[in-house]
Image (tube, rainbow, N blue to C red; front, side):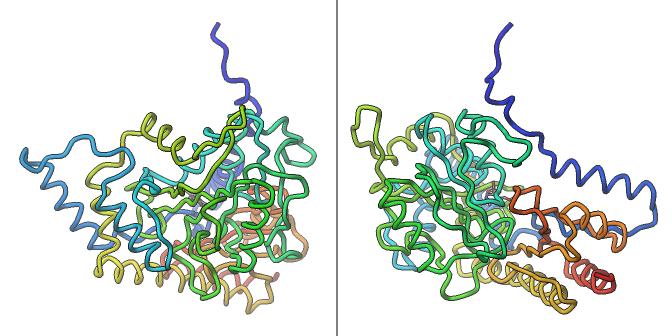
Length: 411
Ligand code: PLP
């Protein structure tokens, strides 16, 4: 019989969300009248901004006529969107990019998952712990992870960078040299950020060690504080060592529409096995144009509308709505003495579980006593044990109700 890719057998089951669903279903069966509120979802709930909707309607009308119809577009994205991205997200912050350095895609999940493909099989990979699981699993599939150790809850060849309250979720530099370093800021799940000075340490490390930073900035739009960098390219020299990922998913309600982009600067170089210098951008361009056929015209018109004056104003309102939810959760939990992180520059609130409870025990307590579903921190990695994630993506009404219920618990 045909053999499978053996690396896939090293993947651990997606235990986290199936286990959450299982416990929730069981509770609902036993307590059919309970009004459960979910603050566990990592998905947005408000509708698309009107400017996006109008642009998409207009684009559909264009496609309806053979005179303005468009078929396959450029795999890397249409110029109108790439130029809007460069102007709106980079030039406005003093960062110069060329159009051939931006690759539009149907989501950051695919991009952060696919990027490892262009690097060597024996590249050493470092990830923050807790971590967005896609970085790890895609490297497991590629055969870079080694075996999973059930005792440590970690893969033996992956370099984990522990983040906890002790280091304010700002992990130390890797203890052994890493080729690829996944950094996610603002962070999912902790909601924490780095200052420019702190991010510079990573850029300096990457330069000194010839490493490449894979900088996932899917939550950039939620940054509120002035000293938090919006792009890794705000750090001098970062173009030589970093690839940046951005998504419209949480910024503009595109989780279902699907659009994101990746920046691969021309300055970024790596070696082939003969020691020749390779421009990483060329490699990614080859990969992208071979395996991807472009984001739909309608979607790209919608995404470009985010950068119009109306689009910007509408997005600001939506983001404010979610960040007000975040403040309500933060303030409510702090008022009852809980130790709370994140929620200032990110839609995630990361709390230390009270009474020394482990993440799953706190999940059960919150579900059974307050009828609230959240996400156990240990599901994002061993360093998440004893923490819990709540999200700001719910409705205002449910967020307020949930906080009121938590305040009434004896914690
Ligand atoms: N990166 C991080 C850290 C995320 O949390 C998510 C989505 O939850 C993504 C990437 C994926 O985003 P997209 O919807 O663009 O695929």
